[in-house]
Image 1 (tube, one colour):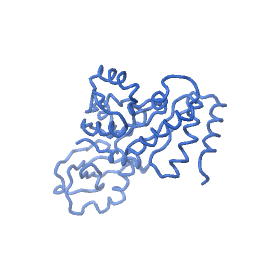
Image 2 (cartoon, helix red, strand yellow):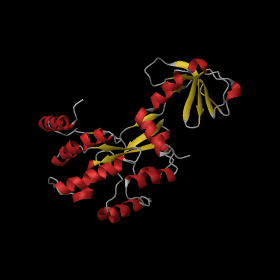
Image 3 (tube, helix red, strand yellow):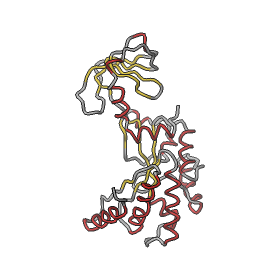
Image 4 (cartoon, helix red, strand yellow):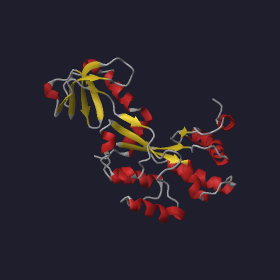
Length: 271
């Protein structure tokens, strides 16, 4: 079953370890009569909380860890023998560029075989959505070369496409600042006008309304990035819209980074 947008939000927003930990807190009472879809039996559990490893069974119901502890034989519909193995929450890969690749390979074998159950796509300021009308033909031609029909336009329709594709892992999308900027003015290297900046901010608001979407910045600092932060951060904190901002300044000089930090600090509401 494909993970829903709510599943994407739950895994990224709270973390798989938190789900595991909630079950751990009740592991002493795991012998309550209940049936599980899957029981992983006899493994050594690393629960993601930082606690030492310990022997335990893990009961899974639906798409959630429901119990961690000693689980009776009659409670399992399917038993997986994990003797001599470690059992832990799925890994979250926070830096991927599989926006299109996950549609080409929805089974995500290369991820699953590494224990990755959640990934964050749209990194480095470039995301699959939104697709501006001015760039639609070019981008759809590029996706078609990889066997993908790019039939989405905005973030919501892209996430809906993921759901329909039956992807095997949880997927969340960073809303790339570079994508938003190119949608507005192409690859021109100049500050945005007030109208262009307003258009980008509308696109950010629309993107954040789609569950499972966040905002990322480009690697390089630019005037447009600083403007984006100054205007977006307080509006979305005040209005309570979901999402977080991931400013990546890996290649910034010390002076650029300092200027950037000052602009962000000035934009944030008090408290």
